Image (cartoon, rainbow, N blue to C red; front, side, top):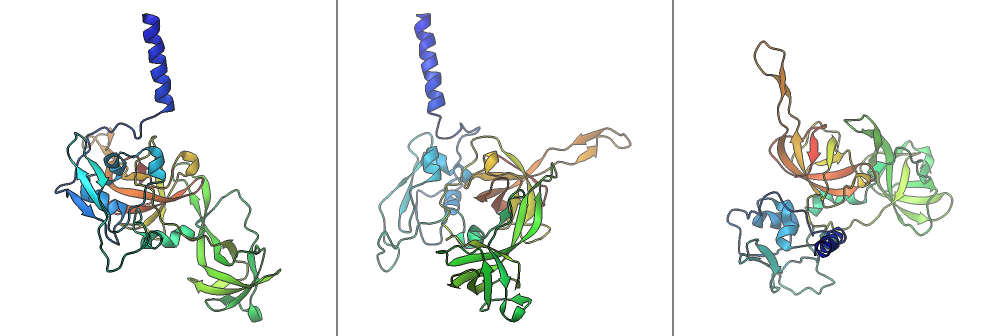
Length: 343
């Protein structure tokens, strides 16, 4: 009998390794938001985060109320305007289910015309989805670059012509950038990458070596020597907001735009990336490191105050060693060097 029990325990242990739970067991029960509605009709302009906040006190626990597995978190079913979300309170742990579609617009859209709602405000992050944001500190610079301007002009802008080498045939739209400041880990002082300065975009009007390009948009003056990368089409961020399964800890490297501090809807760079297990959709908590104070007046003994949590971030773009996140909710300003970890 002892052998049988031991064998069964071994089988169950193996199954647990092969079939992990959809999410880690939460430390606290799932709490509904105050006045959580019994249903919500999705409208244009909604985001997954907004809707999650209507139902939950902690919006990042969205996968739990939907009963999603890990694959569904990364590739969820799309939610469209007109769909009805129903809150089922009959079980101990509440859950959301999809109800029937209702008509919310004057005309009916086909499935091809309908646009799924994004995870977070698309208009805030869209400029950062297609732009080259980070260059690997150890990687060589790109080969496509502007080599000449008409009449040897020093600076050009929207509507001007440029000549570039290394432009790949078949790619029509290119982003223009130049290397900017290094992204330095606040803890190790290691250079994790180089943040780029986005200058504008250009389209190829004549192929060749060099190719002829027209500057179709510019945010700064563009010069000879500036580099080019193909411009990808920005995708809707539809990953479900969720906490990392494993423990993660990082620091805020900087607030994008060379500003000293950030707030809600600011973009920040983080000192961890894909190699550290960070992925699009991860929600992380912001903490201000506790300072050291004298335990008693006139004595040298010090006490370190606890780290104070003050907000949440949503990771929307991940590189090998750094990532970019949108500040979602904060009760104070975000500063470079602030601690970021699991919520």
